[in-house]
Image 1: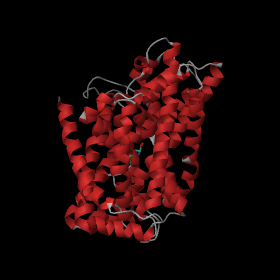
Image 2 (image 1 turned 180 degrees about the vertical axis):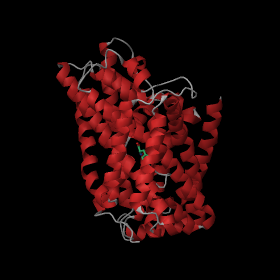
Image 3 (image 1 turned 135 degrees about the horizontal axis):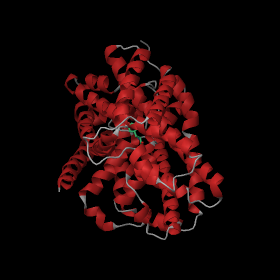
Amino acid sequence: MKRQRWGSRWAFILAAVGSAAGLGNAWRFPYKAYTNGGGAFYIPYFIALFVAGIPLLMAEFAVGQSLQSSAPKAMAKINKKVEFIGWWGIVTSSLVTFYYSVIMGWIFNYLIFSFNVSWKENPETFFLEFLQRSSGPGEIGNIVIPVAIGLAITWLFVYIVLRKGTESVGKVVLWTVPLPIILLIILGIRGFTLEGASTGLDYLFNPSLEKLSSPSVWAEGFGQIFYSLSVAFGIMIAYGSFNKKKQDIANNAIITALGNSATSFLAAIAVFSVLGYMANVLSVKVPEVVTGGIGLAFVTYPQAIALLPGGIVVQAIFGFLFFVMLLTLGIDSVFSLVEAIESSFSDKFNFKKKKFLGIFMGIGFIMGLFFSTQGGIFWLDIFDHFLGTYALLMVGIFETIIFGWVMGAENIRDYINEVSEIKIGKWFNIAIKYIIPIVLSIIFVNGLIDEIK
Ligand code: PHE
């Protein structure tokens, strides 16, 4: 079977940025920064970006592109015994897809709610009934029909776009990558010019340096970079494998990584300036209005929007823009997840694309229904926490050992330098062979210990 190809270099870069910039940038990053020391969080964040994120992104592009295979097959080509590491990444990707698509389903619903700005009145009802938050895993509640519909729309859309593979992904990302960035700029400007914005931003940027002595803050920093760059999932290997063998790598990886971080910062400013305003209007402190993780996007932000000056029309518009932003931000991450999973199966078992997509869509839908029931949301939080941090760290450790020691960091570097405009130095070998696996191992162990405490 002929391998599918990106239509152009930019189709590839946009698709990679699209995968990296997702829901994680909009609510995960601001929230992680806020809870892990505000401005101090950027120290682990940037160290993780330059020491681990960018080198690993380059290595994944290089492995996929040079071996022309998605993750499991690429691993098998390096050494038969390590094929399972590729599959491990794919299993993680599948689990992420299942909960990610539920969030997309919520967003579809909130798009419609934005025309009926009743958020201010009853945020708790949404939390309890719509999101079905429960206190334990045992409570299985009803399926929420609007969520099921949103979920179905999401999967249908994914199916329609992915049916034609990279060719149509390349076209869709021309829209779905720039649009959320433009919207974030608009939302950011609105937020920034509100009274009290600076109090919100203080929480995001004022450094609490003492937090840096906590290992879990470092684990979160590295976890956020990995999750955010979509590395250690097998995704960037698959995306690289749809390039011709001569495509640039170093430059493409740097553009992808910086584009992704810029999106995170924009999102953090947009979200926290509005929270500052909200705290100001309600005469409370910012921590009192912040809810964790998902709640930030679906409860707190809408509540803040319902307080915006200018009346109900303005509020509806900003609510709508926010959820269009989330939707377009998230959708290309789903494409990349499903594309990586699909190509792994078709590389290995010669599955027909449409057939696989049909089956996977069905499984995804059913899993999504589960996550959208009562006990489901509880699991979703746990999944996000453990997959987003520890499962990724594990794959990252194994992956870099395989790249660095089995395939040979020097071989990867040679290949990168052969095809790239920017030449990379020997630091790359040191990063892949020593720094990343060692640092990740330390962080992994310490983070876990911290967790148990
Ligand atoms: N990088 C995406 C985000 O930040 C999440 C993601 C992870 C998407 C892995 C695809 C694969 O939201």
